[in-house]
Length: 276
Image 1 (tube, helix red, strand yellow):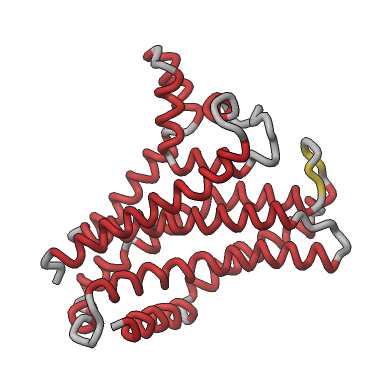
Image 2 (cartoon, rainbow, N blue to C red):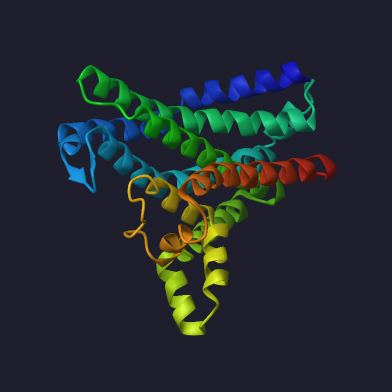
């Protein structure tokens, strides 16, 4: 069964590598890094961040905008799409368990999404080293961990929705609504909510920290702007509650827990229900 899971994951990856969408996605991030070098962003300076640090911060900010919605839309069809096209019935007739099928999809999507964006970040670091630009390897390691957390989080959520959804239309609509809700409850909405309803600030901040997008947004600039003065009230309040080191650890572990938790729930539902 384990061999079957590995074989299915390999098949999924080979199909992805042959698709135009995968190479367009990979080219998007690679081209973005190249353009940042071409336009001299490594020579600019903001709050003490210059060179490759400046490029990495900008790269992560753009990634936070693009990656979650791309993950949700591309992954949510993984299970329900196979069900609608009757591919699932054929695959499950082979020597592979329900769990093997489900987790093969999960890990194939993780690798497919994570590798291009990580290689873009790694390519920036390597090019910086070749160009005699100081490479902040600690920042590189931190942002790599954030990328892992981001991909695991949203792949897990999408797999859970894909296992429960009855159709691809319903699945895509659900993740799009989820995305709008997550975007809505960022700093600006939270501040308006607090002022309008006179809610307890602790409750407002708690709502913000439940939102993985808010966590990523804050974590991306936690090293860039230690006081988080450019991040808004929710982010600024964080350092009054916990130390920056604690939040950095939380920002990596919390989304991973959400992702694996959602994926486990989806896998449990997938095994226990008549999904064909």
